[in-house]
Amino acid sequence: MEDDIELVKLAQSGDQQAFKTLVERYQRKVYSICYGMLKNQEDSMDASQETFIKVFRYLEKFNFQSKFYTWLYRITVNVCIDQIRKNSKRKNVEYDDTYSRPAEVGDENILPSTLGLNPEKAYGRKELREKMLEALEQIPEKHRTILILREAEGLNYDEIASVLEVSKGTVMSRLFHARKYFQNALSAYLKEEIDAG
Image (tube, rainbow, N blue to C red; front, side, top):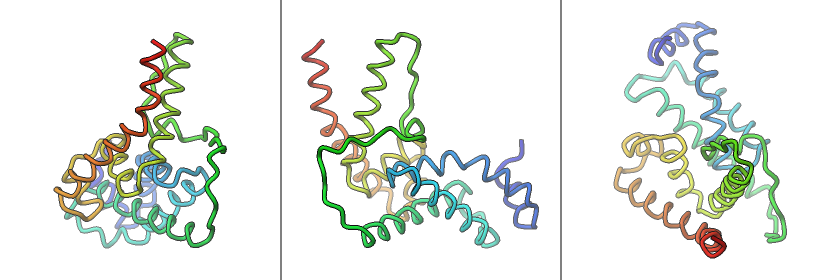
């Protein structure tokens, strides 16, 4: 299996198969980041496509100063931020707390899941995953992005700093607050589970 550097060099020289391999290698991760930030399947698909269009357009300028996936994730995050700004200008929707967001394709990519074979445990884990996704939606965008990059994508602090173009200290601070927001958002559900158990 070719590494990213070889594939990027081949793609930069016009090898379409190399570019296709890069897309196939990263499309699920890019979609996961997009879905985590945009919380909408259609917008996430559009943002993923826009990300790879930009990667194709600017690939010749990639100078190997960072890892390819760091550069790719930076583009992904920037595309999502642009999409969020466009959406907020386009529509001003009132908040409806009776709305229940249906599970969408791709939710399983945001948070890990091993449902197992026990139906009762499977239901409990499914419910927990839904509560975790709801909690994720309540976290402010800049904190949610860092939480997704760290916990779902497994990037280290330096990689996140590079993707978001912020200092490592900022990453650490935002991640601390993101985890706190997440924990607070889940606390009511966890308290119910403890009381019921």
